[in-house]
Image (cartoon, rainbow, N blue to C red; front, side, top):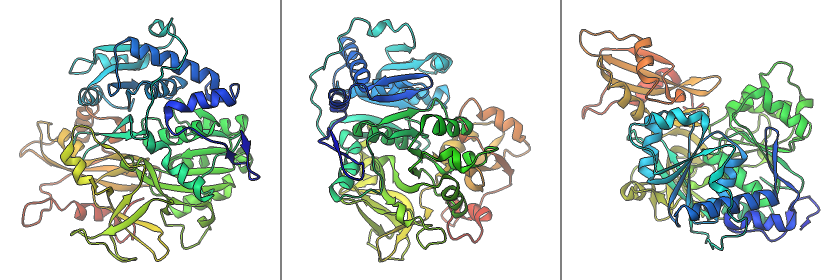
Length: 522
């Protein structure tokens, strides 16, 4: 392995996750691969442990294409299982550990998961599921007899760039999450494009220590982790995000790169006593998941004092498809409100409601054509055909491009509320609310929130003669929805606005909170 004069890694690299750990175990066996709390696995250990788990999966009768779910917080175990799946052709289904038992049950049933790894903390969730769990549930922790005695050698499975390796669930506008199937190419295409053009918008250097602020059940966290594993750097994993802990880890471990959402930046800057010296080792911060305010971005640039790169994309695009490079981060500059520009090999177009491409400056739906795009929505061919059209991902986001190809996000065509980087879809909450015996109708919109970007605001039409209280509704929802989906406020009304065809005028309700703001996302 050699490095360029800029320090960037310069050696032939693997093209599938099935090859990643073996590649680095051979070249740098003692380099720390993943650090979590007080535990560290070297690349040789990560390779051998994932091989052992891979053989355990095969011994359990799993074959290529079978789904393997993970319900637990971030840990080295998660990535051992990821690479084990890659080495057997099985598909990892990471489950958001903040979900309730019914929500987890839907994901496991929909994905037809055959084996579930779960941490002890989430045993009550599995036990409380309305439908039986998968045939096999394996407990994570010591002792782990299920993998004892299995060899730590390669399985011999040969993945291709198009072999599915992960299935991540995104909330659906119909109220049910959809499984986005991603192939190995989703975790290599953008890095290859940057390297081929010699661009350092986002780069990985020998000796980097990379912190993951975003959970691995989110495409941003999974993508960032795999990029660093593919490059052979050290990945620092958080069991859960805590601002004080992150600041301390950056300082004590000498973290050089980090991937976070804007809400995390805000919380770090708000920590008492935090100062620029805490971030002295940082050379680059990658952020995305939700739009960022100019004031927060400028404050982050000043305190963290490192390069910043904004990424924009969807789970369906395999994460980032557009990047605002460090050079564009000029306080007060014209690009500070841009999402960025497409990577080499990625195309962007803006279309009107009839599918016609619009010129620069005109607002329409943003569509992205990227080699990292999803394979499909699992089991939903009609929904796949709506989103993936002739290789183009229809994002549901409204925006425009300028003459130089920079993308600006204006609003969202789809009705998602973005809470701290998590998509929350109104239909799911409305469906849950309308099961309450005293609720005749509910409409949910996003309202601006200084800390989380947006918050969930529910308009509720009570059943005639009934008056549910906000406390009643909260208690009703708390066992049905994850905490981040719960409304922060309830507004009772005798009707909701509709157009002549009866469609709810959701935008009219949203505009009460966003007013004349040019960008109706926060």
